Image 1: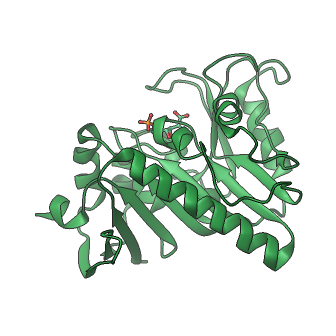
Image 2 (image 1 turned 90 degrees about the horizontal axis):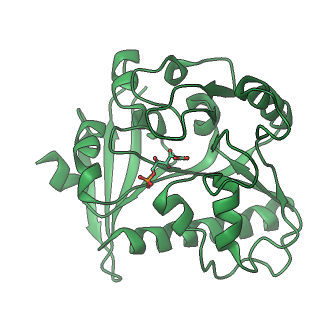
Length: 258
Ligand SMILES: O=C(O)[C@H](O)[C@@H](O)[C@H](O)[C@H](O)COP(=O)(O)O
């Protein structure tokens, strides 16, 4: 099935991260108002962590907010590499009272497979309000890497990765189908080193709308084709392109397509 995605362009990575943080706050407040519960899925990486800093507008007490991680590095709880640790270190007073659903680490799970199975159990019946994903220069999202069979996993919510090309090698990741099953999805990336992957990401896409708001933010809408398994394996970030996806970046789609 084809999808129509939204693409917003910002002057730089920090500005895109701030916009992502605003999306997070809006999604939490809307979900709390509607169902007294909000389920947000965070990610690691430079912008994935930066967007969680200085959040304005969250309730002082975040009861009913459930925080999940789309992927986690399988490292000890006290490791500086742990995505959840990096998140909580930038939260400050945000998310007081929220439930943080940590993926098990080697402190409590003997293997990444067991951590993946335990997270699968926790996720039963959970509806995501918003999912955030970063993209690596190789086109990976979460811990779904080009050429790795986990990219095409179906009928399973969480997988393990034992040989990640991005250190650390052992990881746990939600699958493409679980990450796509959300009310809103934000794919966030910036920097020259990501532009090649972004060009590939948009292969076969067609620009259908283009406007610049009063705030100077350019918003484009693009139709993306249905991707084959081979195309998903080549650029796993294609999994993130759905009708509810907004890409927040420092480069416009038009520039990448030209
Ligand atoms: O744990 C991780 O490493 C991630 O979840 C990973 O998918 C990350 O989001 C991208 O690699 C982008 O990271 P950068 O923004 O640092 O390039």
